[in-house]
Length: 127
Image (cartoon, rainbow, N blue to C red; front, side, top):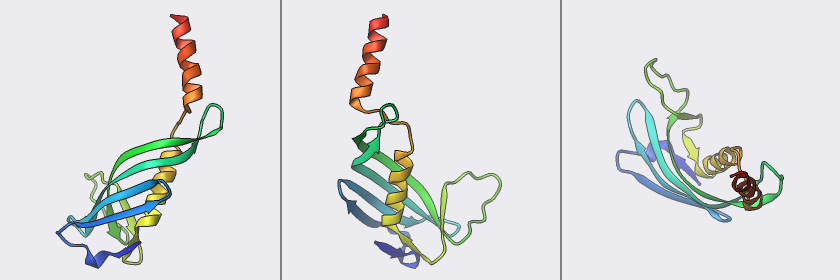
């Protein structure tokens, strides 16, 4: 789902993108300094690999996402720390943003329930 940035104004433009067992739902709204605010929730389940045993498992996802979108290179001032995604064709592809957020989540440390149980057993047997 591509959205032209010129169609985004002060009134929030709501969106919802679904893929398999995950939903990316939120809104886009013009903020200031040629920036568009994206506020969304990523929820559902996604396949991930356990960092202990390397087996695949379904990871529950419930993440709040917030960042800015800039049409072109963002020229920031030195005293601001903003998370900005730069786009270069005056449109934003929400499916691509969703996929990149999923990949970012999958790159974190994750442990399946079986390995978590084994670690808990070891911790409780030490006490």
